[in-house]
Length: 79
Image (cartoon, rainbow, N blue to C red):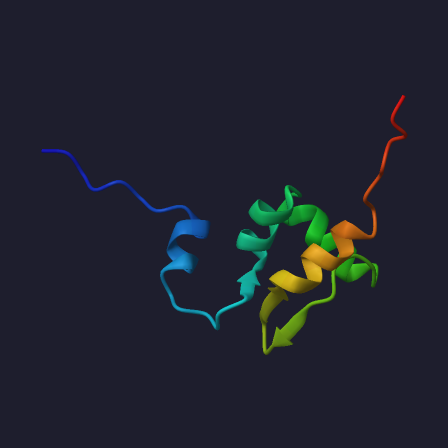
């Protein structure tokens, strides 16, 4: 008999119903292509993406991640 597959933290948290447009740190890491550790380090060093802290829980707004990433957009010159 096969045991049911365990959900990753990302999959488990996605099913918990956070407010639309808000991502937990695992979802934000997956969305932005960064590691959870780098997001945590950025919070500790007071840099990186803006975030919302509710008690011990941390959330990122998708629009803030998009805005921060668009500030680093590189437009190469065409030949």
